[in-house]
Length: 149
Image (cartoon, rainbow, N blue to C red; front, side):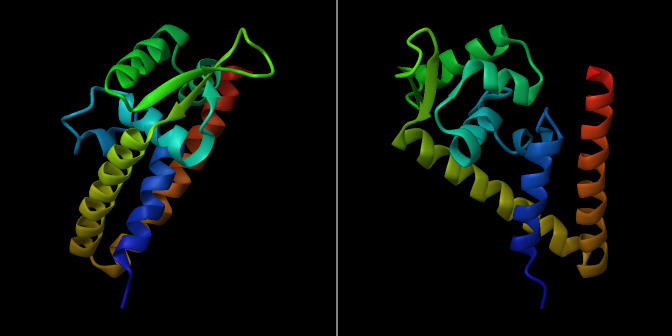
């Protein structure tokens, strides 16, 4: 029997990495304005302690947009900003326990929703969809790299 949640989590991982707008997650989330949840998940799962420049580079958005997102996340108590001990001019961003709980719950909700969609697709189509989305993510990254060069 196919584990749809496993593939939903895999698909979600590739969507976060490959689709900078992260619409797949955001369509299910009304409590967080555009861009906040992907940033929170990025910090939680990959780069807790990143600086605004790292976040800006990862999502391909300007630093003023990142600052706006971080301000909102700080006000909600989901992240804290801490001076970098190596370079006091830089500020590191860390996820709070409240932010960790919120992001984990929303991520789990998205995995459940994707799992149900994949189940409805059926095993063959679900596997094909995941394969295609991985390929789209790879190709999107190649295109983005070509546009930067």
